[in-house]
Image (cartoon, rainbow, N blue to C red):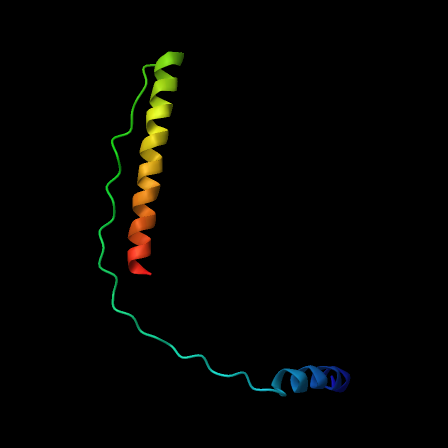
Length: 77
């Protein structure tokens, strides 16, 4: 036990040797923004062509949703 305390002493002294400066804390106003609505996702009927069409349409809708979400987040930051 004494050996453990002697081994930990340098670590404690190194950690406490130089105090770190305090950073100011800012309290911001509560963010007031609306969550963007989910788009109406395209469905497919099982054929390859309709699946591909739905995937391409959903890709563009997903990109628009991501853009809207980023814009809402930037408004709050």
